[in-house]
Length: 151
Ligand code: RB5
Image (cartoon, rainbow, N blue to C red):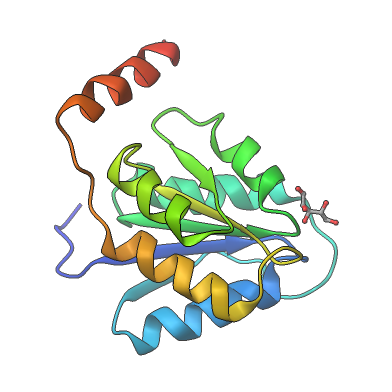
């Protein structure tokens, strides 16, 4: 695969998270961030695990740096995403958690609940998630221990 020039975020949602995904897409694209929309593209009922996989595959395949998943609570998406090897998904509804899950857990997927956070806070959470890097050091050892659990 050709090396990407720009930082890229993949987004996916189920029907409940769809409106929030749209708001996040608009926000991130306005910031000049490349986005990959992995659906869903309507409020018609669908199953969130399918979209968790579509969104996470973009990170696992190297097409995106990070993924954002939206459902009603963010919880179902995070449960499904964390079943995938190499995915570290964090369901966040506060800025502190969104920042520290990047700094300490090197989270690569942010899960948001459209019935939990409004679009304004969701965009702020996505900004913090995108703008914060992994601290490394002793935290890498702990990430490696998580990876060992996948074996
Ligand atoms: C859909 O109604 C809802 O269950 C789903 O979006 C999500 O919140 C599951 O965790």
